[in-house]
Amino acid sequence: MLAGKRIVLGVTGGIAAYKSVEVCRRLVDAGAHVIPVMTAGAEHFLGATTLSALASEPVQRSLWNEASPIPHTRLGQQADLIVIAPATARLLAAYAAGLSTDLLTNTLLATRAPVVVCPAMHTEMWEHPAVQDNLAVLRRRGVHVVEPDSGRLAGGDVGAGRLASPERIVAACAAALDGGPMAGWRVVVSAGGTREPIDAVRVIANRSSGKQGYAIAAEAARRGAAVTLVSTVDLPGPAGVTIERVETAAQMHEAMARLAADADVVVMAAAVADFRPVAVAAGKWKKDQGAPPIVLEPTPDILAALGAAKPAGQTLVGFAAETDDVVANAEGKLRRKHLDLIVANDVSRPGVGFQHDTNAVTLIRAGGRVDTVALATKERIAGCVLDTVCELRADSSHPTPTPAEPSAEQGASS
Ligand code: CTP
Image (cartoon, rainbow, N blue to C red; front, side, top):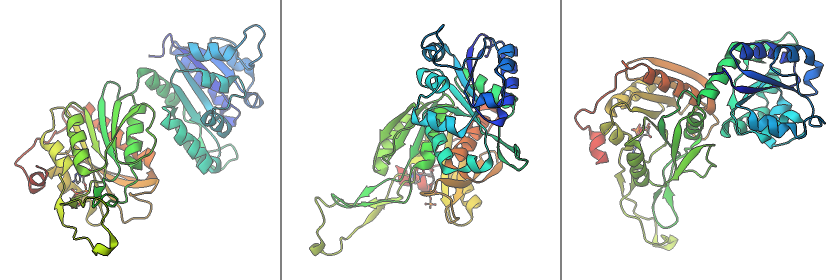
């Protein structure tokens, strides 16, 4: 996968710059043509001669090389991949903001090749919201992020922020060139809470922000899948994701049934209203008419319907928002709706579920395996959900529940 590929290896100014030498060596050993680009900061930590000796070409540092005018466009356009190891907080901020101050940042803007960034910095900097926000922007644009390891840092303290191992970085480069582990898969994700109209201006809604569904769609696209997101919320679409906007449970049902028919993976992350008003008042219900008589009826259970019609080989994932008996209730939904995987969360816990940027989940597979994921960003939870989906699909022996007799829920969906 790496053999014959032109790889620009960007090195920025952090202590971990010395480890870029090992990354360079491994890429060259794998047959890649490696062109190192160092920032001025990197030269405080690493001699350019070392990288020049080991790479396929001498180190490049300047935008103003008389022998090669506009070097960044040549580097960016000809690259098959750009990897930045280590990537400092400054580089991440400049890249997220689109600043072009030196050869490396210009090259990043001039390329259409996949980009892998490998951040390394002190824990306090790594956890700073500015750094995490910049990473979220980059991820949304399809940049591959190799998260740092936890361990001993330059000052002797211990925490998250240590540059990932050269093995992990080189594997991430190979995966990025490969098109990703989900290349060729059609993935459909639903996100947000449905809104059921009462009259021309009022709706029955719920607290879902759509963030978890968006994070799953973004991560699936980053892994190479063709992703459609059926969404009720007005967030900007993640890079490479097709968005279909809906509002009501009925509209979401129509969109999901149509798209799921030929999907490889379906993830139902939306919070669907279980009940809707039987009648929608024409125009605005006026205050002087008194309290409106709102009579509710069940909505279709979209996921149960998708489970009943699931094509062979499809992986169907549901969510379960619970406050009590989380695992038992989620297992019931897994069985009744013929799912391969259910992602259960206890929405009564602080920082979990609706509207938060974080989540903590229990992943329950149809085969019975149960994994818990402690409180983490919704992006990380998305990664864990998709790791599990990839494992299920890699394991051809995984039980794919087939539809049985219609249950009460399926009855409600007809
Ligand atoms: N779901 C659905 N259609 C509905 C209700 C729920 O497709 N009308 C899906 C959700 O998107 C989620 C799963 O079913 O993936 C479980 O939703 P949840 O609200 O946790 O459970 P319900 O089945 O609605 O049961 P209850 O509200 O009684 O817990």
